[in-house]
Image 1 (cartoon, rainbow, N blue to C red):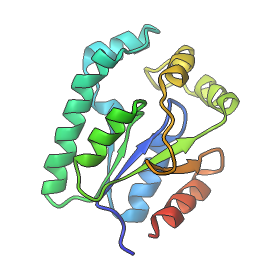
Image 2 (cartoon, rainbow, N blue to C red):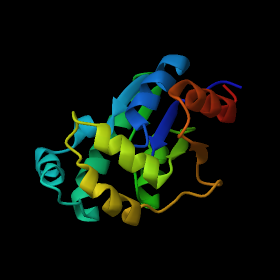
Image 3 (spheres, rainbow, N blue to C red):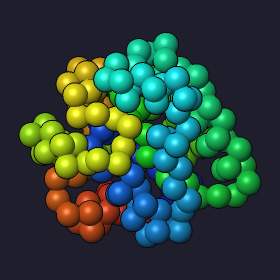
Image 4 (cartoon, rainbow, N blue to C red):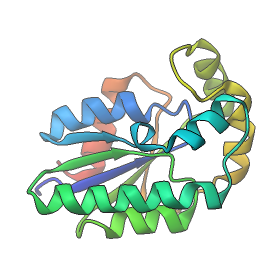
Amino acid sequence: MSPPPAVVLTGVSGAGKSTVGRALGDALGATLIDADDHHPAENVARMAAGEPLTDADREPWIDHLVEELRRRSAGGERLVLACSALRRAHRERLAQAVPGAVVVHLEVDPGDLARRLAERHDHFMPASLLRSQLEALELPTAEEAVIVDAGAPVEEVVAAVLAQLGA
């Protein structure tokens, strides 16, 4: 089975989306799009100040990511998008941007998430926003996404994703 044309890699802050996304992209010969790099400056400022985003704040960002996926996929790129995509509707829109795309959700124990965020110092998203992300998260079902335990080392997480994708 050939790899999907795009993987939408989701999860809350600290789940390892960027790290797993880079390694997964390398394994699939895909380009990583880190959604954090596409947030409007206002969103980054709000999060950096400890203010959770609303769905209204997220909509223009999701719109931009959908267009980015469409544009780059149309150019023939295989893609991995690392994006929180907390809402079911957001995941659906992102996946529909590229026919054949697969959503992969990274699950991590909340205690491990808190530890990871406390150890991270080079990101605008403060650990204090973890609770709001967990509250906003609409957990995907197995029918909606490949769900992977991302508490293991990166190599094992990527291997689990590849096995689930049949790649």
